[in-house]
Amino acid sequence: MTSGFDGRSYQKRFDTLARQGVDVHGEATFVRSFSPRSVLDAGCGTGRVAIELDRHGIEVVGVDVDPSMIAEARRRAPGLVWQLCDLADLDLGRNFDVVVMAGNVPRFCRPERRRDLVRACAGHVVEGGVLVAGFVLDPEYDVDQYDSVCADAGMDLQERFATWERGRYRPGDRYAVSVHRRSSGVQMSS
View 1: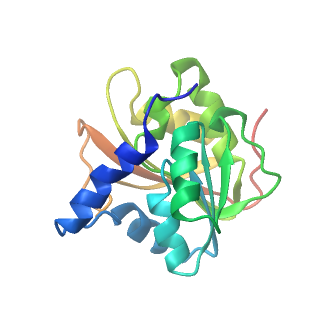
View 2 (view 1 turned 120 degrees about the vertical axis):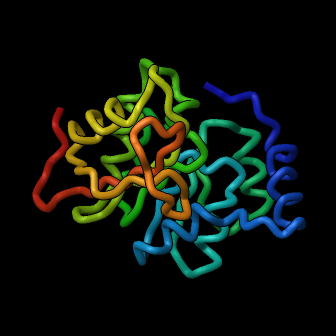
View 3 (view 1 turned 135 degrees about the vertical axis):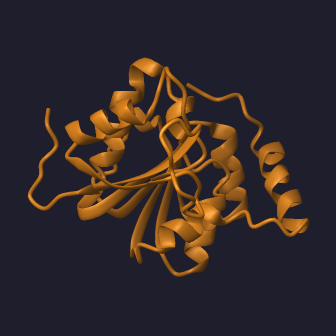
């Protein structure tokens, strides 16, 4: 399930934006607001979010299915932990304070595997921790569908925004950043 991206070319776009003064760290800033000690960057791409979180002293693991993206992440930050893995099959054997899926991760997953993706990522959230996802919405995959899978995985909707800068979400918006929290004592359903 590779995306066909070229990691270096993909990263150059963000490097150009950063040189132009654009803040390319909105997702990392959002995640940092939860004061996590550990973060799983699920669908890490070239490591932009993970590297920024690490720069702020947060333990981070990056996972992506695309070998080119992981290769670029490893080139940019060889000291961080990068895993090549299909997120729908993820089992790292540990949990994190925050699991973040930035950059339309559910949209890159085959529709028949989206439930597995969300369940696998939610399964890596500590009790009381959060699963954060930002992605483009459409009738084929909307917030109701996403919320339903999160609920099945023991995650309760806490907040939803239209942007990583916490812009107000309104029904019908084309993009959503959703925060789901693992409740105390809630186990994932099988």
